[in-house]
Image (tube, rainbow, N blue to C red; front, side, top):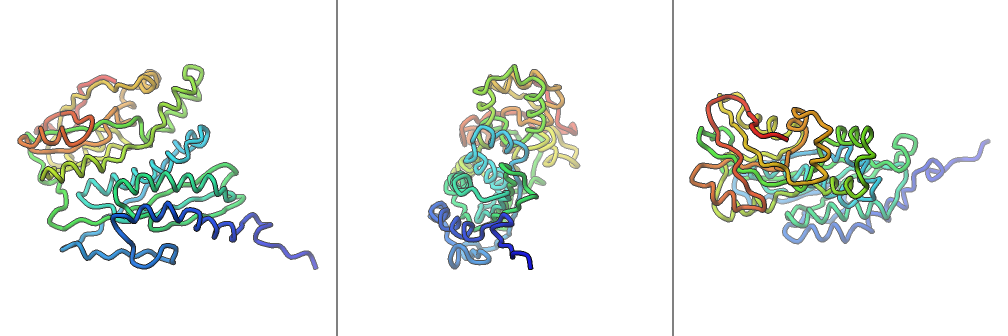
Length: 332
């Protein structure tokens, strides 16, 4: 009879995987300062009691980091990948007016690299701690022969809650309402297939420092939303500007209601991004990148001053009108 094989010989080490749970426990614990799970971390499912809500409505979101992850791995920016992962889902939850409560991750690798995964989770915990969202658990899967060596598959899932009578309602948008944009920290986690193509075709035009300057993680807009709440301001709607850029993401809020807006977007003050945009078709610029603004709140005219002051980089971008569609008057 042939020698019997072990799971380790097949490329999977369950003992090492169990030890990793202990290694990241400190990161998990620092996400439970504002809120706590029912029961302990590491059980088969996570539970959270909605006792502080009168009419709780569950809101959910999931996302990834996309092909930006390839460049982050190349430049050893794995913590930033964790931040991107959180921000892409948590920001979506915030657009509902809800609170991000629990976050779960999926990490797929060829073989466990404890140091890399711990750094990745540490980046997640940095952003989760900032917005009071619990790292409730997730899945780390070793898949030798399926996931290539050195590659990380990454997905994130956020669960939030909002009071039913406090949900943001884009149906309340009216002509004359004002769009206030808040600056991004760069290209965030969208459009990287196009960026990678530019770097492949024109890589000699970009220094390593310039490429790294494109890599800051997606801005977490919890500070803006918290400031709006604290001032007693309830926006008509909020948009997280991701794939599709300003036109497509704002069209979600205004489309189908015979409403639109002419956007006046300030020039994106980022030298590396401006160099990048020189190699991209103008229409693709607007429909791929956030063009310097990763968040937009739509408010009444009497709330504009408060809204602009709600976060760094607040700028009026336009006024809702009755000409359907999003028209961009600015140039790249």
